[in-house]
Length: 362
Image (cartoon, rainbow, N blue to C red; front, side, top):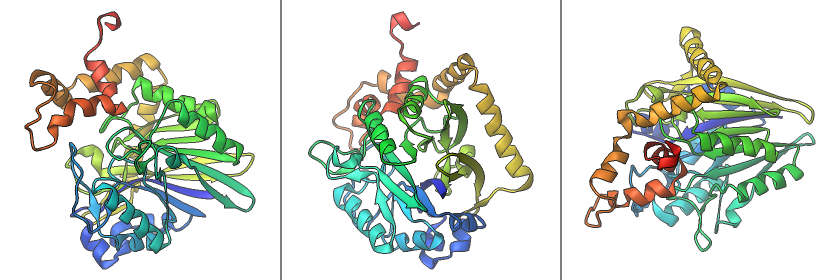
């Protein structure tokens, strides 16, 4: 079985003209051939596809596209799209349900969500020529996740998720985990994220992809499995002017019952979409990726790189939260939720605990 596994997909001002015109070549460039080459092509749709305007209260942007864009993505080759991420519910539960309907109407199977936190734990099973691959999609606790009495995305749980992987393994030949987590723009994993991903491999996963950092990170082989700490964006063009934002990795998984091969293909942004990286650009992206992957082989160096990221000026929001008070209930922007948000979401809590160590950890 050949699986094409892609990172974050969001229509933006740069790509909406191509989505509206169904201009697949502008949207995907020569990555289009790769998308269409798989038995199954899977990505993470990190937005709502809805005409609704009811927004949830949150810190950060609200992301959406037109429901018709689901048909464009199907024409590109996508067969399955994960909705376990922190933007699927930006336009509330009706917008989330609109997204599910738009994908299903277009012939794309959505996964990674449910009527409540237990229903959302259902794995996706893909079968071809007698081989079954399960995909377990989970997200960190950031706005979209399901609750015991609320529809939403499948929330990562350090206990339940491991059980879900073990169960998926019992009913399949291979298991892939799509974990929507990790700190934005960080190219190395936190200690907690690394422990979590390694635990997923021990529970039965063959491949773990983390997909929230919006940058190409690093990888490691662990106990016969493959972990990618940061797949980067797939088609999420021009949303932020940051060097990390302009590239990502397509993951090509070729699996049999006895063997597994993973190949990473770099993609880069264009004015209207993306394309495969070539020549010197491709070589530079892959060499930087390999260099970071070598660096995290030394766990002390990995910790040093993580702590250096956390203490850089880019983490000023955390310091501002402390200096200005934790909660301002009069703030209409949603930033009155900043402190509880930092405690709720695992990636933010990783940074928080690194910046503000208790005395016995210093």
